[in-house]
Length: 220
Image (cartoon, rainbow, N blue to C red; front, side, top):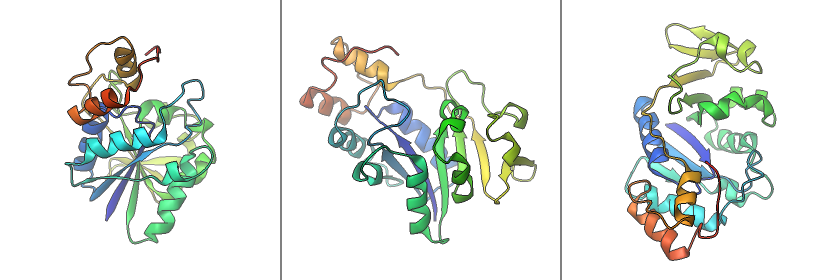
């Protein structure tokens, strides 16, 4: 099986997350794409997150009708900060060579890869799929890769991807530009504005029922 790992705070999950995940799943013929909500995101210390149970429930509601999507609570269940290296190692041990892992992240996050814990140890454990961001223009060239990783890869013309020294691959995927952000949604809720068509109806109803984001005021 080909399994994708898609992490994030998902506070809340929205149509941009879901459409991006579906385009990744389709482009790489993934058998399963796992949404992995973070517990304590190490790179977002200044922004408080909603309780884990609420974020998990919203993800569960949002993906319920897609048989290719699954929820993993591995990071929520693990104490301490949610480091990607721990998560990928967890799934690499579970796969035991039988399945192929694909770690999915956005271009903005990839550009910060040099600040991640044990980031060099991540690449031999799974393939990587880096998705474009709205207005980013799509794929990067090797020369424009983050300095921290550019010397670890070489371009493979047949695969149209970058090959790591370990044999795994790094792919860049241009996806639909959907300019929705979770912070924008939280701001709209806090100001009493509509979030219809920004999130699935089930998620909108859950936010209203739980009274989430009512007192939160944030920048984009």
